[in-house]
Amino acid sequence: MAKIFSTEKLALNGDQVRIESSESGAFEITDGSNVLISRSTIESDISSLNTQDSDNKTAVADDIDSLSTLHAGNVTALDADVLSLNTQDSDNKTAVADDIDSLSTLHAGNVAALDTDVSSLNTQDSDNKTAIKDDIDSLALLVSTNDVYAVQEDVSENSISITINYSSVGFTTAPAVVGSLTSYIADDPIIGIQLSGNPSTSSAVFMFSDEIPSTGYKIDVLASV
Picture (cartoon, rainbow, N blue to C red):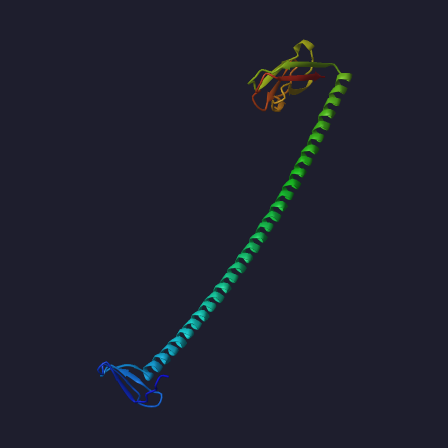
């Protein structure tokens, strides 16, 4: 069984290493002049490590709190951006819907105006047809009740007037003369026609509203007293 020595100082290696006990539970290890290890230094180191550990925990906790605060701020900012984008998207949808409604209203107005114009043109065309028919009926009546001279002549291209000679009929008084200008070419425009001055007993001159653009035009003339 090992022996237990009780002493307050133990010198080893020619007093190069000295172990001393100054009080109960306290000790020092020195090299003769300097303290190498002691209970107080160990306790101080432990206390320092505990303090450093506490500081590190506090710093880590502060960092966690800071990161949590930053994360919360980022989440709030992101939520605000998403809300702003949603609001902007809603505004854009409303603006687009308003534009579509406006265009639809404008289109409806244009369609209504076009329908009105077409209806007006149809009415005018119907009125014109009625007037022409009345004129034809009137001329037909004149033909049936009077001596009437009727002739159809070709109209020269680029001409602006034509003279109709009916001297062969032998009118003793100037007749009433009427002319109608038509073209057998479908794309030819309508050209206006008008008597120039008063007809004589032998001829009448018709003026055109524009130069005759093709060789497809013919003039039908009726003269009667």
